[in-house]
Image: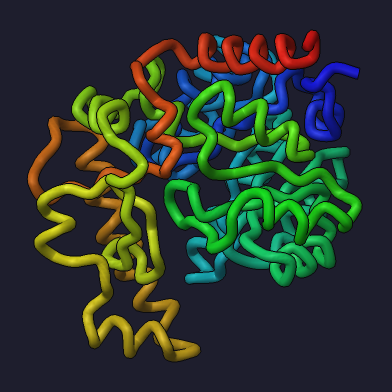
Length: 330
């Protein structure tokens, strides 16, 4: 059996066990489609699609289908920050199902309603987790697989190392995908050798030709080293991985005292996170689409250590797949 044939490829009908993770604001249709066309699977971030890249959901799907007819997925953030937000996510999910999407990655809440909608038409739902506790909750809600977010991930990173996290989760009877720290062919092959069913990559795909992030952002990813990635609470109230810049050094990485107080309250934490999210969404959108400015946040994970050039997304997928095939022949 080839190293590329895993429960993930079987579940999703793809050739390479590699997911291009959903990124706000970097998940434009051309990037999503390019990864799927090369044999992996791109994941739509609906808020990025509509509010950053200017598509309706339907026209965004049409643009993807102009490039590839291969499977794509969609990210559904299921946190109940407001009924308006929840209703919007449900509408996007219904539109995705109508457009033939059968793979969903859920995060930040109970995925049950997504599971029910997806399973009704034979779809699959994989849930983002950082430890066994959240994995069990996701599986109780019916998730088909787990995206194990480790301490090297971009965005909201986990606390544990990839190997230890797999040990926590591998007896649960579902595919487990490694998310975090995958920037090179050796990282990809190493995750498969550990026993992961596949990998999810975000940072590596920022530095691709199809990604519409500004060239300054892409170059920052290429030039950064692992030591340049820090965690900041200044974006969402919980630690987020970003590239260290003079601005980050100036403002620090901890939330202010008022924010910390509000984040501890059962009710007020949702409002504080919403305020942070609105602020960071604006800054991320701005920093991704125009030349780098002093006050920008540049999200990235420690996988920057393996990113050394901007290249076509499909070439990244093909190169990683070839490395796995070469390992099979040894």
